[in-house]
Amino acid sequence: MKELKKEHLKIKRGLPQFNNEKAIILVLGKEEGFIFRAKNRNINVVGKFEEKALKYSDRKKDFDIKAGSKTLRVGSPSYSIKSDQRHKFVKKSVINLIAITKREKPDLIYLLLPAYLSKMVRDRLPAEIRRKLVFTVMGNYIRKHPFVILEKIIN
Image 1 (spheres, one colour):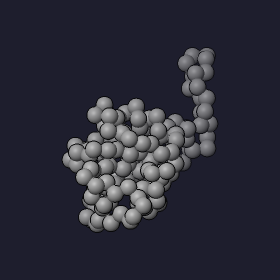
Image 2 (cartoon, rainbow, N blue to C red):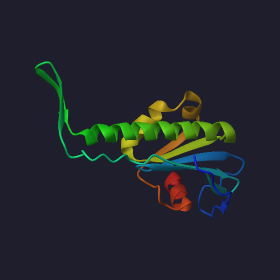
Image 3 (cartoon, rainbow, N blue to C red):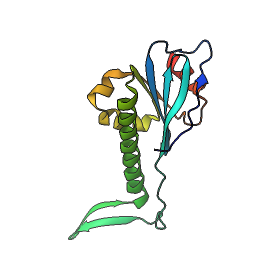
Image 4 (cartoon, rainbow, N blue to C red):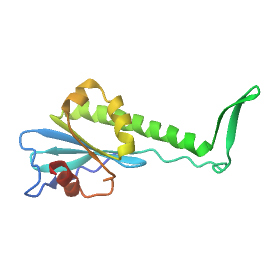
């Protein structure tokens, strides 16, 4: 996880203010994620991580796996690479969320992530985090301003 500047952004009126409660907001994209902490009318980034996609020169070539005279699997290596990459990213996301949750001890946890990652992330979350999970929003909000993210939480 990258080291971040401690910049607090004052939450504007009309958005959740998180008075007397602490919330962690996990925002995931395709290859990177941010973890925000919202508390007492302030929001700031407390974690940033990424898992860059690996590029292989034989991406376009099809392959088949054979066992004796039978073909077990036919396909493109990019599919399995993409799947492996996705699992690594989800694992890294959950590890970072667990670490920050232990440090920050939030009352509420929100997830904003693409639909295709939702089940994988939820299945890997420990029970104590799932109990604090309030809301999940499907979509890619990785490049959105924190106020847009907070608007999605209240809608």
